Image (cartoon, helix red, strand yellow):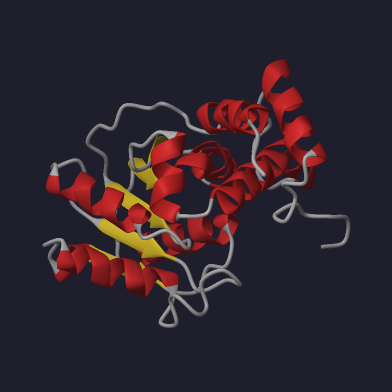
Length: 218
């Protein structure tokens, strides 16, 4: 059972994990692979609004996508964008990345290999991955300006779109853990976490929303 306190705590994490950037024209939009085709939708929308002349979709498969996206996350994103009217000629596919760091590094290499000068990036992710993706990108590609973006939705709307509130809460908790622990591993920049967010994270862990946590050695 998910309680009112669980929802309130999840709302705190949901709000913190978004960067609240205002999208603006950038050199390229990079859609980070995941189980959520909403990332492809949001990336395609940015292109259609004239905010990026080029799209990179990046991602192989993971334990949550290998059955749903057997051709790879990036390829399924590409197909979704084509259905939305994005020309194939403006889409590059990076099919090897298996984590956020690889998403950034491999996209950088792909763009450099095509001779594309990148000064700014619209970094498109799931809403609750905005902050972690942004911090990872700044760590690995500091000379580029990043604008975080995602599908605009409330937590309740996002839960409805996924159809599994426990999975979303688990994902929120997992993302928050990585925001807090990955800087010491050199994966992303360090960011201040408000006390109320840290406390909400602790309560959600205690309530059992822990399936996406990483443990020592994993």
